[in-house]
Image (cartoon, rainbow, N blue to C red; front, side):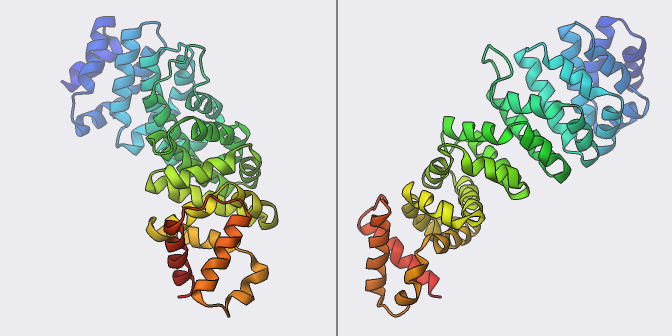
Length: 335
């Protein structure tokens, strides 16, 4: 079977090449590795440059089979020039091909040796547009393509040299748009928040863009209230980074967006990391001028004063539930 695949990919007719490419995907990992060593990636990439949809699809599946789980093959395929060919294929705006192409970018971007090459190719702005649903005029970009696009960008973000290019591509605003447009508990928002936190933590420009974007703080507050547990964790970390960047500027803004109830809840029943970050943010948000006076107050008086401060900031108070959460928080802060 290996010989049949190799011979037909290199010298076969159109039908024979498509059949061989299809058969390659059915071989085991050892057989695929041997074929890669024999150079079958070259005719497969050549098939991608044809105008034959069936041949392109078969070649994409075969290249994915060669690259999946094999770092050497990922590097080999990129060195053979697959990236510009994939970018050219995206111009076809064929929905099913787009999913395969983005899947290919996802696989090759998982290899550290390929990250700079992908960034240098101009792929990042294309991936950002696909993620934001702005790549074509037909709005036909599937959810799977978007999920793979954000996963690819997250792979690339692990190379800190690439972060400035990602920020200049407008990725911050695209991720914020997703946060505004989709359910806070959706998988796409989950992945978008992971990437946004990673970028903000590595780029001051990204932090400035995020904190200055209209409605961003409110969206993070809503995410703390409505998001999945991991999403809440990333949202509170982002708000903490924003507040730490300039407490005097952002403390009041965060409070006025109604952050306190969600933060109190998160400090009690969030993930371990979310609890810690929520406590840190609550400490930044409290009124420091009265901190010394509070240490001499009874617990009941302390709770009452905090609640008065929350009311003064225009918070959405949740009655006895919020009071209980504040009591829990005071107990935790005092330990």
